[in-house]
Each structure stands twice: as C-alpha cells, then as structure tokens.
Image (cartoon, rainbow, N blue to C red; front, side, top):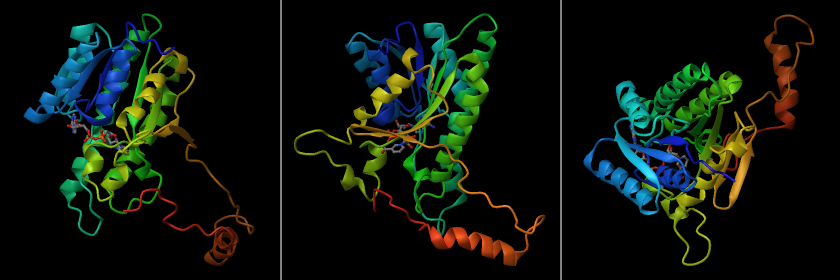
Amino acid sequence: MGDLSGKVAIVTGAGQGLGREEAMQLARQGARVVINDVDLPAAAEKAHQTVADIKAFGGEAIAALGDCADTTSAGKTFKAALDAFGDVNIMVNNAGFTRDKTIYGMTDDEFDSVVRVHLRGHFVNMRNAAQYWREKAKAGPIYGRLISTSSEAMLYASPGQPNYAPAKAGITALSIGVAALMQKLGVTCNVILPRGRTAMTESMPHAHLFAAPKEGFDVFDPANVAPLVGYLASPEAAHISGELFVVWGGQVSIVQRPRLDVSYDNPQGGKWDIDVLHQTLSDYFNEKHRPVVDGYALPT
Ligand SMILES: NC(=O)c1ccc[n+]([C@@H]2O[C@H](COP(=O)([O-])OP(=O)(O)OC[C@H]3O[C@@H](n4cnc5c(N)ncnc54)[C@H](O)[C@@H]3O)[C@@H](O)[C@H]2O)c1
C-alpha cells in the first residue's frame, strides 16, 4: 500500500517542520522528492539537510531553493523537478509563515505578505502542475495529486490572525475548485488542516500546549501528520478529492465542505422587507443562537 515508486513529488517549505516530515514520508514510499524552501542561508542549509536525510535511507531528493509564491521561482522549482527526475506527479503546497496581530494593529504589509505566501503560494504552484498535467494528459493517462495546507484557523474564530485565517480559507476554496476542474483528468486535490510542534507554533502564545510529553505518544510530533499526506498522494486514494482533513496525533477528522444549513423564502413572496426578515430570521437565531467564539481547542 502507498507505493510511490517512479513518482516525483515537490514539497514547498520542506526544510523544516511539517513539510520536512511530509517530504521524508513521500521519499520513504518511493517517490523522488524536490525539497523547496526559501533561498536564504539558514533555510537553504535546512533544505539540504532534508535532502541528505532522505539520501541517508536510500531515497532520492534534490533541493530547489526559491520563493514558492513568486512565479519565476516556482517555475524554476518545477523545471528542476522535470530536469532531475523527468516528471512531476505530486505537488504538496505547505510553505508559509505567520505575522499575527488583531485587525486593530495589523499593517498592510503584514496582511499582504501572509496572504501572498499562503494563498498565492498555493495558486502559483497548483497552476504549474495543472498546466503541465493538462498538456501531458493529451498523450495518455496521467498521475496527479495536489495536496494543500490549510489550518483550523479558518474553521474557528481566530481573532489574532486576520491575514492567516482568510488565506487558509482561500486555499480551501481554491483547492475544492481545482479538484472539481481536474477530476476529468484523474487528478485529485485535497486539503489538510494539520497541527504539529514546529517553528511556527513555537512562536505563538500557546506554544506550551504543543510541548512534548516526558513519556508516551508525542501527540504534536509533526511526523504524525505525514502519513495522511503519503496516503492522499498514493494510488489507493484515487477516489478522494475535494476533501478537507484535520490531522494531528493519532486522529484524522473529515471536515464537511461549507454548505447551506436552512433556507427561508419570503412568506409574502418577492423582495424581503425588514419586519418580515426580522421575524423570519428570529425563528432561527432565537432557537439556535451561535456564539462567535465556538469551542476553539487552543485557548491563548
Ligand atoms: N504547525 C502547525 O500546528 C500548523 C497548523 C496549521 C497549519 N499549519 C501550516 O502548515 C504549514 C507548515 O508549517 P510549519 O508549522 O511546518 O511551519 P515552519 O515554520 O516550521 O515551516 C514552514 C517552512 O516554510 C518555509 N517558507 C516560508 N516562506 C516560504 C516561501 N516564500 N517559499 C518557500 N518556503 C517558504 C520556511 O522557511 C519553513 O521552512 C504552513 O502552511 C502552516 O500554515 C501548521
């Protein structure tokens, strides 16, 4: 099960954290992996370390450094995969960073940079893969897997992340749309909402909640997320697409796609007036008051 021999994967932000674990997982399953991370000394060193660690267990990997959200750099990463391994079959979009603040104090740059790295970072790399696979499919069946990285920040109120949470929501909408478009080609596109102890969580106020236990199962070991990515990339998951998975520890939860709850038609017909609208919606909200902050599992 899960054999990826002969397949080629690109993982963005794979120098450390979840991306590193996911790249190692794909390599253990037999994929040849391109390790992308930013072209800065510390990140480059980590990317080369991931490559070395994959080679140490007999896997195949190369590093391709560059900003995942930049069209030219992402194009170079994709070309590096084709030049080194002759194909691309699996695109894992994972890279990103946070700049947390509430909307009271967030600057334009803090908003734009986070939306850019996550949402545009996904878009640019998914477009590269989509265009490549559509062209290749003209000559015969192809193998294509897109795996996106969202966050539970888009599910629950995340008042300190008015840049990150909408970027992650955008990634899910992008991915569900691409899944629908590309199913004709046999390409799947799924979204993970992971949790794991990484540099990203270390920088957060609730970092202590991710601490490793003194003994027993380390629930927040980032390696716990990787098997789901390996599974979604595999031939066994060919029928799963457009789905969202919360994943951490020993648990995988399937998230319902956003959908309508109740619909009301104007009892008077035609356009609503405010009195009737108030009366009608009161039936719903009086019975089913929904608190805005609703059971977020990681209090700050
Ligand atoms: N750790 C968690 O609990 C958690 C929860 C929800 C979502 N996520 C998501 O998981 C993904 C991985 O996060 P992580 O926790 O491993 O964080 P991390 O900081 O450990 O790793 C992120 C990696 O992305 C790289 N990166 C940043 N900008 C880049 C760019 N422009 N181009 C290429 N690489 C870039 C970084 O250098 C780093 O290696 C992110 O998308 C994050 O939002 C993480």
